[in-house]
Length: 240
Picture 1 (cartoon, one colour):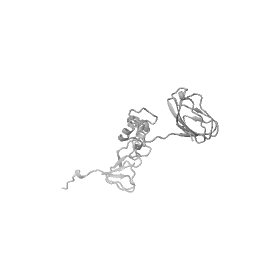
Picture 2 (cartoon, rainbow, N blue to C red):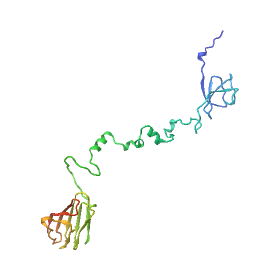
Picture 3 (tube, helix red, strand yellow):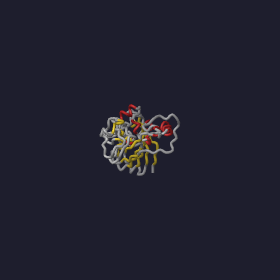
Picture 4 (cartoon, rainbow, N blue to C red):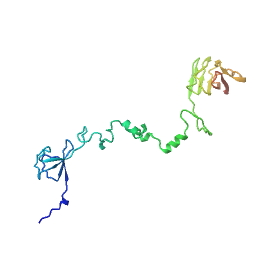
């Protein structure tokens, strides 16, 4: 008598339903429209038999409620979307304990080495040095003044130059709130009278002697400490 080894009989996934195919009871067929899985209940189901034919197929596994794409369950994350199908990505980041840095390019984030350098750097907005400072080079903002009544905008430069071409009355404006130092270099165009601001205090030396000859140079350092009085002195002079 012939023996049949049932252990060698197993179901197989036959893929999506194909109206041109014939099916047997060991086949598992997927309905493309719903995702449901069916199995034939006849020894052989002829080609063209619809999956909805209850006399030929039986529902094996019902798919979860379909999403808008007709294949994925509502609420499922699709791998191909790379999490772009999250309903609210900001809330998801919050729930995961991630801040706004989670969406910043890694190129914008400092490495450990960069962080150490940043910690040791001088703040751009200023700060206090706790050790010696060695300056390899110092450059100043320079403004060249002109005319008979030039104004030195102290917020715009640290060095002012003036070539006279007649009598001059000097003023200054926008002094910093903290202590400050500025420099004025005057080159005479001739024996031109210079009237300095009234609040400049020249100390015991008094006002500098007038420039007498074209080409004479007078360098003046003047500073303030937040009060209205400005202390001025001649730091260098050259007569020709």
